[in-house]
Image 1 (cartoon, rainbow, N blue to C red):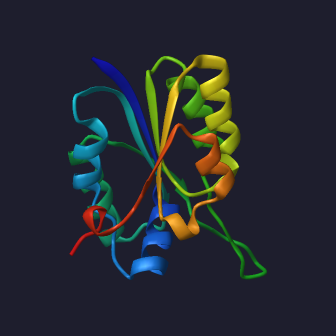
Image 2: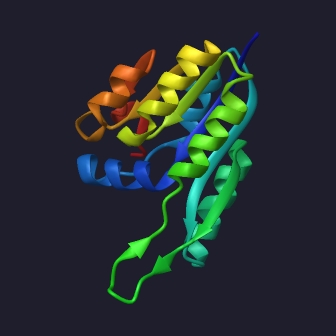
Length: 158
């Protein structure tokens, strides 16, 4: 059986599906598609913790599906800007868990992850599958992956 690691950039998915479709992502359908006929080695969803109840409920749904949820605090800077991204954590976990998997599924359109995809493919022979909103996914990430699945109606909540 194929061993798979799944990494989800929750903020990226939330904002890109909202921007492109005005709808939310369907994590249950995604899980079924990404894990079909595969053994899940690790599945991590990376999110920002703003401490609100609706967000906690969403995080519990992710856990019930099968994801480990890693949280970082939301930081509001004095100049009004905000900080809260998981790029380094996703990249480190991607190497750590992806090197021992046959496939790494990355749910993000962030071009910063093209290096992760290239490293896993070239150094560890790990197949990399990327899911993202086509119009908002970096071409460099699409090019670095073995396959790209565009998020569309099938992967969105009604």
